[in-house]
Amino acid sequence: MNAPGPRPSRLTLPTGREVVLGWCEVGREDAASLWPAEREALARCRLDKRRHELIAGRVAAHRALALLAPAAHAEVLARPGGQDEGRPFFPSAPDVALSISHSDGLAVAAVSRGGALGVDLEQRVEAGGAFLEEAFAPGEHEGYAAPCAGRVEPITAAWAMKEAVLKVWGVGLRAPLQRVAVRPVLLSASGEALSLRLTLEAEGLPPELGVPPAVLTGLLLAGEHGRVLALAAPA
Image (cartoon, rainbow, N blue to C red):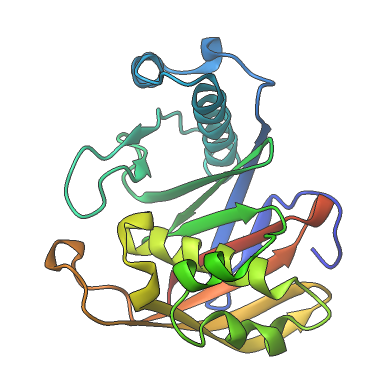
């Protein structure tokens, strides 16, 4: 995607790994489109907003899987425990990595073969000092200013990429954000799409989080309505 506009359906990470994306607008689909086990999980959601997001995320995942493997049909469940508790996966397609994100009425699902994957979709972050102090390690978000200059809003890019990397790791926002830094190095730029090499630095982590990935690759893309899409995977 060279400029904000159409939602991409296929992207290629710097390693050459293909990632397929599915999209769904939140509130446009109902539970009838879900598999029985997915509807059971939906029944445990008490908030309407979360129910609509869960439906859209599952529909987006089904659409992405249909593009990646047209013959495959699989429900989406969340891992029930362990280091990556809550990570979405396809029980009947274990070779396909899945990650899901929601932002301002839109859900995206990323699927790929070849190991863990993280996606995050963010509306422009209106960041005050308190957010920056809580969300980032020292010097972390400042490292996105040069790679993103004139292409992608850097604070939003830094937050989206951090969330994508935490999804690759499997811990999500359970990680102590101020003690985890995702440092980017620009590999190439095409329009408003950035290919990055990412280094994850962490210290003083709770042992139950396991060992984080040290080096990853990522993509940052400026999308419609000021959104930023981030993809990350192990290098």
